[in-house]
Structures are given as structure tokens and as C-alpha cells.
Image (cartoon, rainbow, N blue to C red; front, side, top):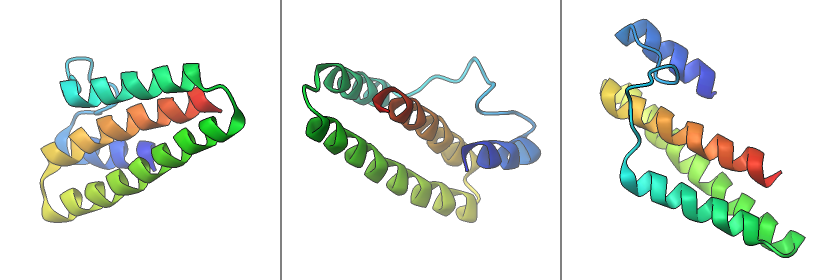
Length: 97
């Protein structure tokens, strides 16, 4: 889904969001990701880790819905920002598993 969204944005804007090294994530997203990563590192049992993964999954579902809405509404800049967000959530999932 993430690569497909990035490719569609590339076709529309001429720029790959995931390859754009000048694009920065909002500080609030960076803080959220940092806090989740710390919680993953501090998780002491499988239940705590499962709860963190479930919360991340919920963030992904929400972000995908927002991505669809932004693309359907033609706001490609907002859609690009959601792709960045989804990229971070994917990294969290990889760290948790």
C-alpha cells in the first residue's frame, strides 16, 4: 500500500515522497514515534508489546483512511504528508516484531 501510494504521488507530482530527502516529518509525529519506540524497548512482556502493535495498527488504519480522503479530494501535499506518516508507522511495526 505504501509503495503504491508513493508511486501514484510520483506520477502526479514528479517526486517520490519516500525518496525525497528534503521532506521532513512534523515534530509532533517525530515525538510520537520516539515515544512508541521507547515503549517498545521498555516492554517487559508479550502483552505489552501486543498492545503497542495494536495501537500502531489502529494508527495505520486511520492514516490509510486519511490518505484515501486526501487523494480523493485532490490534496496531494496532504496525501504526501500521510505517506511520510505511514512510512514511520511501518518502521515501528518492524521494530516491534
